[in-house]
Structure formats: C-alpha cells, structure tokens
Length: 380
Image 1 (cartoon, one colour):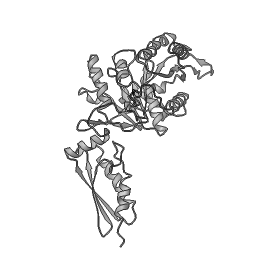
Image 2 (cartoon, one colour; image 1 turned 90 degrees about the horizontal axis):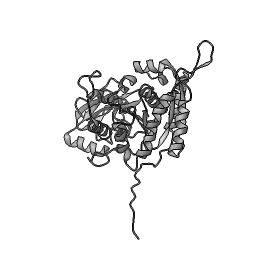
Image 3 (cartoon, helix red, strand yellow; image 1 turned 90 degrees about the vertical axis):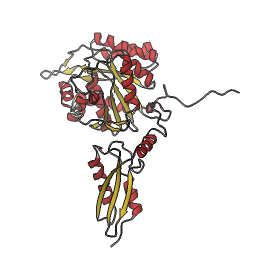
Image 4 (cartoon, helix red, strand yellow; image 1 turned 180 degrees about the vertical axis):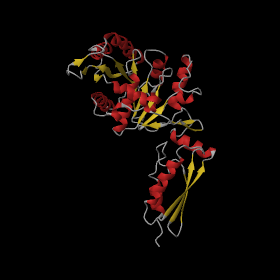
C-alpha cells in the first residue's frame, strides 16, 4: 500500500487558514505534529490559541478536509492541544510586526487599508444603516472588510449585522467576530448589562476605548476599514482624527436643507483635522410613487448636492456626491432584523445605489494623505 507524502501533507496544511486570524496555521505556529502511518492514516496535532477557542470545530474540519484531499490518505485524526504562554507571545509578536508595542496598524507606512469614517451632522439620517450595507456590499465584492462601531453611546452595528458571537481573547489581543463577511467590533460585548445598559463615559474614556479597538483588536490585513462614527463634531470625531490621521470622511445627510446645513459642520471639521472628505451620501432621497410613478420627495430635495458643492468650495478640493439612496423602508427593517438590504433584496433601487457607492469607495486607490513615508530630512 502506498504511503502518503509528508511533503504533500505539509503543503496542504499550509493552505489551511485559522478561521479567526485568517492566516495559515503553519505561519502561526499552530501545527504541532504530523504522523503518517503505514496504513495511510494520518495523525495531525494542532495547537489552539486558548482552550476555549470557539472555532475549534471549524478548524478541525478544515484540517481534516485538507489532509484527506492528499493522495493515498486513508483516514485523518486531528488532536488538539493548547499553546503555551511563550507560544502565544511569539504569535502575538508575529502578528504585530515583530514587537509587542501597541500601535495602530493602519498607520504603518506599508498599510494599504483604506479607512473611511462614516459620519453625519445629526442623528436620524440613516448613517449606521448606510455604514452596515456599505460594509456588506464591499465584502460581497471580495474585499476584506472591518467595521468599527465607534458610536459608543448609540452603538447599533451588532444588531444591524446580526452579530451573535462574542470577541475571542488571546491574552491581551482580541479577535473580532464576523458576520455577513465583515469583521465587527463594538462596545456591546463588553457591557455586562447588555444592550440596555447605558454608557456613561466622558471624553477621555471614549478616546481610550477607540484607541483600544484600534490597537488591541486583531482584524488582519483589511482592504477597507469603516468606522460608524457618532453624529456631530465631538470627542470621538476628534479622537478618530488623532488616532487615524489618514482616515477619510464620508458624510451622510438627507435631502432636507436643515439636515444638510448641520452636515456641513461635520464636513468643515475636516479642514481643522487635515482629513480628506471622500464624498457625500444623500439618504432617504425621492422614490417613485407606487400608484402613479411620480417621484415623492418625503424629506425634501437637493440637500446632498448642497453639501457636496459647498464643501468643495470651502475645502478647495472636489467633494463628490457619491450617490442618492432612495427612501426604502426595507433598509430600516433589514437593520432591525440583522439582514442588510444589499443581501436580502440586492435588486432593490436603494441596494443598487449602495452597491455602486461601495464599488466606488472600495476600489478607490489608497492615497498618501496622512501616511508616514518613513523619510527623514538630511543635511548637505
């Protein structure tokens, strides 16, 4: 009876990614042993990061499937062990770029992650719904997407995405749960009293939590990081500008001119924080009457264009109107049910506009604004 090739088995195991970290288990030091028996059966030893790893079954299935696909393998047995403190420390150092220093990975000179802060001038304009559907639409495009619920007081992203799993801790490193293909972090899992428990933080604590979300949470190599920011120009907006100087701002407004006027204040803040405004999204725009087909302007008209044009003049740079999302009650009901519109009804006009905006932002080249180039002046 032919014996399976050990090299082929190791090559197959190198294609198995850890379900949470999304890196090959061989690169993470999670492969403990491989024992090939004369009868073609294979015993594979795998190190879990912690004994309570919630992905142990998924990881076991992935390993078994990969090894079973190798020629001449007759059976696979996967044995699980747990990393030692030293092994976990080595893994953390590897993931953090060779050191234990806590830094925002998206600020590193080599980072290619596009970072967008989704904000508004006031609440009630559908900012969180837009952020959620944009994140899911980008994930459907094949991008690796993270969504940070930076609206600490009014966090709603877990419900809108249907997140049920809690983050997984590896010592002082947090692995965020995934839902609808998006990696999600929010303050909700860290509140013992659940969703109804109020968050009573002053500015310094808000800054500390945002900083922790950016430095302690391992999101991996993201293509796009979206932040659902609270409305207005308060502490979180200022902290985000400080912690993520390369982040670009996306403003959400309604067509109503009173809402647009308030949105302008949030956009004008970019001139003080030296951030770029990637564009404006008009939510709750006109939609065809179900009876006569004539457009209905429930929330006014032209607010998004006013914000885009005014900011372009004030900032001295082009601020595009990224799209006008027609009013659709399913966008709201989908958020309540944890089923984003771009997934539940992708052919809906509102979903198509959201997908178009996601394409525009997700495929946009990463700029150099706010990015450290690692250069130093020299004297001649």
